[in-house]
Picture 1 (tube, one colour):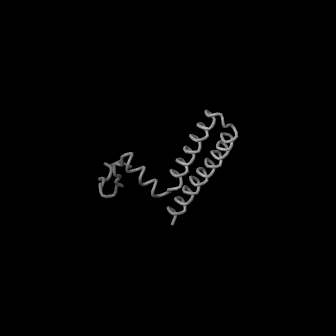
Picture 2 (spheres, helix red, strand yellow; picture 1 turned 180 degrees about the vertical axis):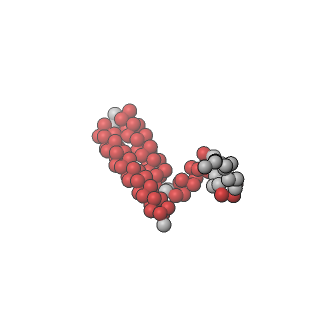
Picture 3 (cartoon, helix red, strand yellow; picture 1 turned 90 degrees about the horizontal axis):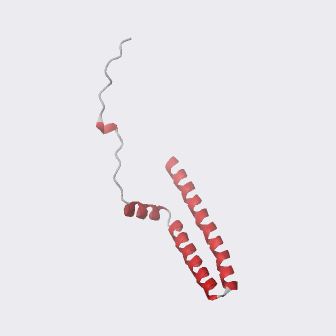
Length: 93
């Protein structure tokens, strides 16, 4: 069997991808799953307040804020996993 030249490539069959910058991608991902950035901001706010309380010497409030931070991180991770599952099931349909 003699190998012939490969068949011509039709550029219309190739998928096209758009160049997406950081801002466009961030906004698209935020629209797809808005709970993740909200959870990150909530976690950051609680952490900041907890550190401020610790510096002021209010150890009871600081300890409470660190526990709240762990809870906020858990909610953020749960929303991240939930968004991934929703995207997976959406793409299968």
